[in-house]
Length: 275
Image 1 (spheres, rainbow, N blue to C red):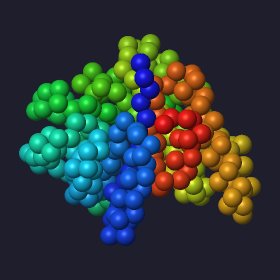
Image 2: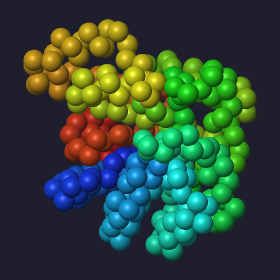
Image 3: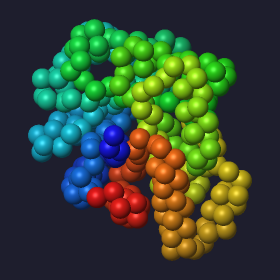
């Protein structure tokens, strides 16, 4: 079975950011990835931007998957959005629980398994549905076993495969696959790859999403703070090596969190000889 490689964007908010993203996606599309995905802000806060980008890319003939979560939307609003994607020729979706935007208090979050079931109920097998998973445990989970069971529920509800949160410990991913296999999960689980660009932003975001940064790596990044070229060279080589080990160990492919940048994603792709 051939391996699958894909890129992810977030929807730009400014006109300048939108124009830049057009250039980035054009260059990365030349690498011939299987598809692109476009994220969806907390509670669907970027829904219109996400939809605009997805439909633009579909019109350009680029296979593109919108991220989707119920957030504060009603079932009627969600069905209208899903139907509009189907009618536009979208073939993939990334279904997530998502997060509520600040200020909405304790409104109930709809689990991704419910969203997957909702999509299947109304569109059958039209969409290839991806869901998220956490090799190092979701920060809201009560435990490792519970977190893996939640993944199984999402896949049993009709998802085709899963994409992981980023991680920097290869053993964590393969241990996760072993545990998934033991409870009967047999669908592909694609590693999410985060190129390292800004040390402080990475440290801050990793705390909120439950991604562990090994101590040695944290110290190394800190030591290169005043050496931009050295930092770029080290992190590009490190992520390339991480990807090589994942693919050699049997990972079904890779999903790159591009941060809306060509580099270092393109160089890592070329280092792996994926084109």
